[in-house]
Image 1 (spheres, rainbow, N blue to C red):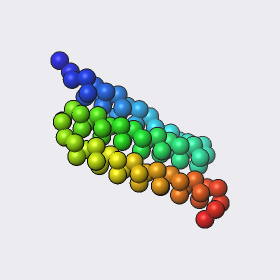
Image 2 (cartoon, rainbow, N blue to C red):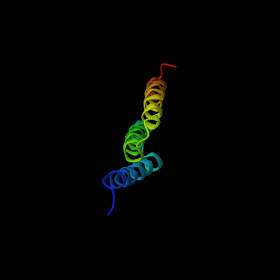
Image 3 (tube, rainbow, N blue to C red):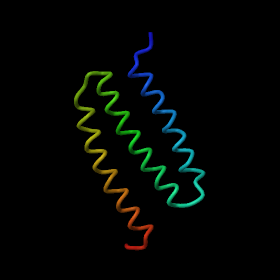
Image 4 (cartoon, helix red, strand yellow):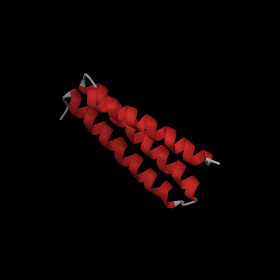
Length: 85
C-alpha cells in the first residue's frame, strides 16, 4: 500500500513541474516571478510533508529557513521589477 504522505509528495512534485513549465514559458516577467514563488512555496510544503513521512524534525527547520530566504528574494525581485533598485 502506498503511504499517503508519499502520494501527497508526488502530487506536489507534479504541481512543481507544472510551475516550472510556467517559469520557462511565461510570457512576462511577473508571470515568471509568481511561478517561481509558487515553486518556493511547493518546496517548503514538500519539505514539511517529507519531515512527517520520515519522522525527521530537521526538515521542518530547513523548510522554515528556506521559506524566509525565498520571501526575502521574492521581495527583492518585486522591487527590481518595479524599478526601485
